[in-house]
Picture 1 (tube, one colour):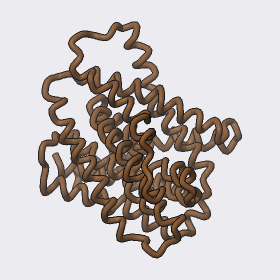
Picture 2 (cartoon, helix red, strand yellow):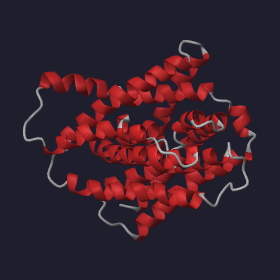
Picture 3 (cartoon, helix red, strand yellow):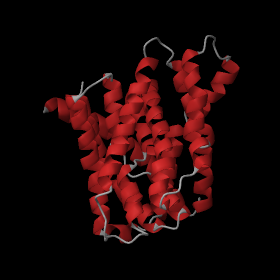
Picture 4 (cartoon, one colour):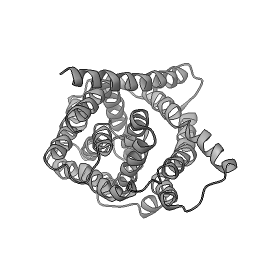
Length: 312
């Protein structure tokens, strides 16, 4: 018990530091220093510049022998951690309106693994944590724009989004660096590292601003939001935890904990974006993202501490 409490306290402090950074974004939005357009622009900077630089720095720095061999196994685990809950969710919310049902299912299955999970993995494990988290994000992007988009749109898939999104492109550019036979010049590597260092603070500011723009009151009065929150933050991470306890195949200790952290992250920020694109209830999606993000301040440290205590 003392080991668990120590792990929970350590992870809790790391999560708390992320939420402090979120508070800056929240206050800036409420003070009208930034607006929705500014938040969208910061999101684009994060997705198309900062995160790719982080991936380049991470994969370039993790070229040691043996690390790359576990990436495909981790990718398979990541896919299972999303696809199995997706199948389960087909039995939930059957009687909900067609504008709400896909949003509820999408939000329960897909996590905010990039904006929330990746910074926490970075805080806990540094470059190796980022490497595994980036694999999870790449798999997430693929699933999100295929079966996830089909779920939200009623059967359609966005081929353009599948091939041309920052997660897939960043992964495709950075993965070969694991096998690079020469060194990148410092004049090129130094600015990449500087931009990469912006990932965590910028991601947290963006999340804080989006929380400030959400209709929390409406979300908190909707009992369906609590069901989705329980599934997203407790039930599905617990299933992943149980699977790792029973079948710890091909993953090192860091990979196991990162998998749990990513699986236990709050609802994907794109729940609101894709629901708006497909004519579904985007306000419901935004509310779920806001509530699960706030509740994850309590559930994420517990999930990570359980993983650190019992999976290694």
